Amino acid sequence: MMETILVVEDTKYFSDILTDELKDSHYNVITVYNGASALKKIEEKMPDLIILDVKLPDITGTEILAYVRQYDTKVPVIICTAIPSPKLKTYYDRWASAVIIKPVDLDSLLGIVKKELAKVK
Amino acid sequence: MLSRIRWSTLGLICLSIILFFILTKVLNPFFLPRLAVPLSIIICLCAGTVLLSIILRPAKKQLINMNISQEKYKETTNLLELSKKEMEEKNIMLKQRTETLTTLNRINKAMISTTDLDRILGLILEAVQKDLNFDRTIIFLIENGILGPEKGVGIEAEALEKLAIPMKDKNNFVIKTIIEAKPKIIYSIEEEVLPKCFSESYKNLKPNILAAIPLISKDKVIGLVLVDNTKSQREIEERDIRNLTTFTNQAGLAIDNARLFEMEKNFVEELKRQVDIAKRELEQTQAQLIQSERLSALGEMAAVVAHEVRNPMASIRASAQRISKKIANEDPNKKYTRYIIEESDRLERVVKNILLFSGDSTPQSVDTDMNKLLEDVLYFLQPEIESSQVQLVKMFDESISMLKIDPALIRQVLLNVIQNGLHFMVNRERRDLKVATMQDGTNIIVEISDTGPGIPEENIRKIFDPFFTTKPSGTGLGLAISNRIIEAHKGRIEVQSVLNYGSTFKIILPLS
Image 1 (cartoon, each protein chain N blue to C red):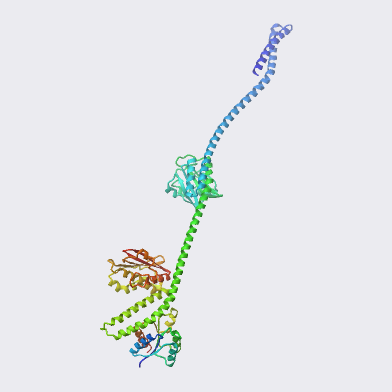
Image 2: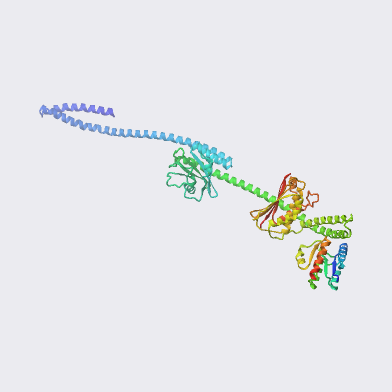
């Protein structure tokens, strides 16, 4: 059964690339461009993994992470950001599975996705 | 008087002859002529004697008086002689005194005209020597609880230096003189204690050839003049001391004034120095403030730029990567995707450096073994070192203490500095890289030396400025970041460079 990955990314091009790359690697990908849609998708059904941009048009990726962790402490959440805030480092260390900084190497990202999914299996 | 006596005696003789004739005539009828003559003679003699004694009584008195007068005369003559002598002596003394006063006046004038302590001491010694001619004269001054020999005549400088006496040694005669504040001639050597340091310079002592005269200013003893005649063995007299005191009274004041002036001069100089330091510090603070303002502006800008650059960069790089995957390796266009990826990475490095430079680089300090950290860095750089055929010399002091530093940040500094060294040694004939560690008290020092072309004088101060680079592909941030990291660790980087010879970077990190 194909694992579902929720990609929350407001940059259209980058989310497109990510979606294509993940699809090429045989994942079921749901792509949303803002926090509200992300929360809606999470409420509908918790995905197997979430790739989360921090800076979104409505709410932040950190808030989405907090929301997710209320219901599920296990689902892997990969934070993908241009500038990681030093203030949030301990928070991410505790609650996020990994933090990757843009520009990302697609192969590294796929490696992390695979590893995180394997952990929860 | 004498003539009176003479006449009286003559008259008396005449009177006796007349009386004799009268008596012989008178007595003749009563006595036999044989008896009358001697009887007359006897009576005459008796009468003459009585009369003579009556006549001579005033003469005797006169004679006694005359004797007394004569003695008085002698006495007066003697007295006169004495007075004359005394006057002559006084004249000599007066002459001496005048000379002393003239010298003193000259010295005073000279002393007033100068505030140079050494010159004043010289003048005093010159005057004492000229006027009193002792074998040796030494001026001591009290400073910081020590009576130190300041200047002397008749003594070698080397011997003079040894004569310092601690003020707490109160049993020796020198310090005693200071405490008593009275001039002192050493009458008895046995009764007085000599300072220990005097044993060499004051041999052959005998009574009355050594004297100490305190130097007094404003009722306070400020030093002492020590005079002696150990060579000539000529005794020092009270008069010498009196004369010397005339000098010392003035000298004390002059020395004190000179010292005050010197103190004031020093104080002014110190004040000036402190003002200079304060000014420099202020300038530094100002420069730092400007720098930190620049940096904070840079920091804000960096965050925006990083975000705005990294997001499109993420799309560019990932797109190139996607295309690269779809293009066959043989396709000649594949290399363009590689170019995009590599150039994206280069841009990313710039962004990362700017962020690191402007961002919060508060070190996360942990105990770190500097030698081990250096080994790690050198291991990481090994391929580069080998490919550029650089001779690596490691001189690690294994006994250095553990350092509380942020290893990730310091690693970056070491990488930056060593990579710079390697970069500038390319195309050099000699390619030696020396990496040494050492401990200097409370600092750990990492010394990185290369045999590159060296840094021109005009660039030395600029190498830590952000965006200053001489490398064609440099960002100009490597050393700027390194410097900031080391500063954040309360350390510093020192650079020494000789053109065409090489450069040495000293990274100095405090242990605490």
